[in-house]
Amino acid sequence: MRTIMFIVTVIGVIAVSVWAYQENYRTQGMISETEKLERQIGDAQARLAILRAEWAYLNRPDRLRDLAEINYDDLQLLPLRPDQFGIVEQVGYPEDDVIEDIENATEVFAEEVRP
Image (cartoon, rainbow, N blue to C red; front, top):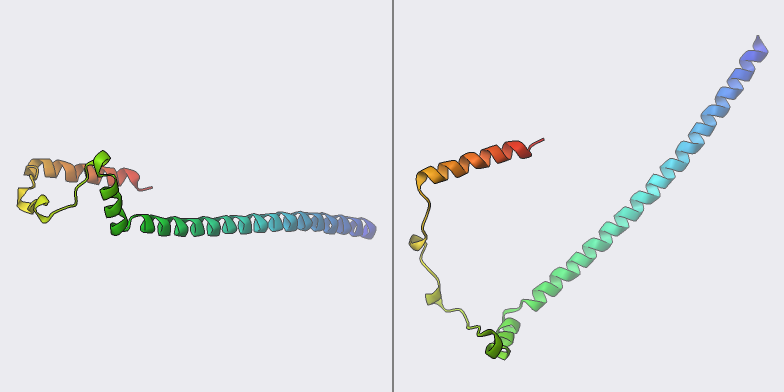
């Protein structure tokens, strides 16, 4: 009886060791995959920062003004003047019943989005 218990114990220890060994390799694989994803996220953030800097550089007002002057014949772009802007009172707002419908639609939409 003692021999059977010893053999069962040894088999149990071997089985647990094999399981722990497999879990260790799965864990190491997940850690390396996580590190790879973190590197990709860092690279994407660096590229995004560069693109934002380039966008800011390309949208400088003096550069855009020069481009508008150079391409005036093709684009017919004119500089903005203060008299081209309207007054807030000139904006036509919808009637009250339309606003209520919009508010109700927003509430229904917000309820659908929530999990």
